[in-house]
Image 1 (spheres, rainbow, N blue to C red):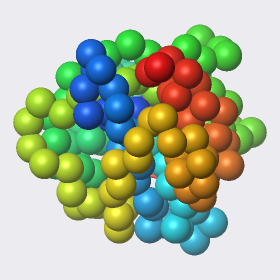
Image 2 (cartoon, rainbow, N blue to C red):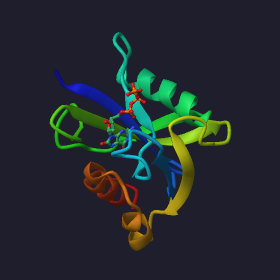
Image 3 (tube, rainbow, N blue to C red):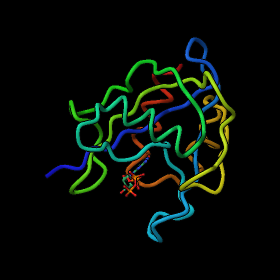
Length: 139
Ligand SMILES: Nc1nc2c([nH]c(=O)n2[C@H]2C[C@H](O)[C@@H](COP(=O)(O)OP(=O)(O)OP(=O)(O)O)O2)c(=O)[nH]1
């Protein structure tokens, strides 16, 4: 069975995005130190959007407004590995100040127009095409 993951491309402004919030994972060992879109697995009985709001509250302590979904190659999202797919939405913080409360040890706002800085981060490998799509769709 496919594991459904949801993630957020949190930007400074949905209307005029200039920076993206990247989050550095602390676990598991295979992913520790790598950057990702904050989010996680959808729980049974939960909508994808509700799962994303829950994960962002738990991990970062923020409430967000979701914008467009980052267009993915499949309706259930971007392939991450043999078992998991991830849908990603643009999002803007409406309440709270993002902090690495759970699952991350660092957060970083990266300029979307600085390709080298953006793609120079050690993202989880499966995330690179998503980062590229985020960059293209926020231009
Ligand atoms: N959140 C997130 N997960 C990603 C990204 N890229 C990527 O390959 N993954 C993988 C890592 C994990 O195998 C899976 C998401 O699991 P997770 O550990 O974040 O989910 P969760 O918070 O619900 O944690 P748990 O139930 O395992 O405790 O998707 C990404 O950008 N963000």
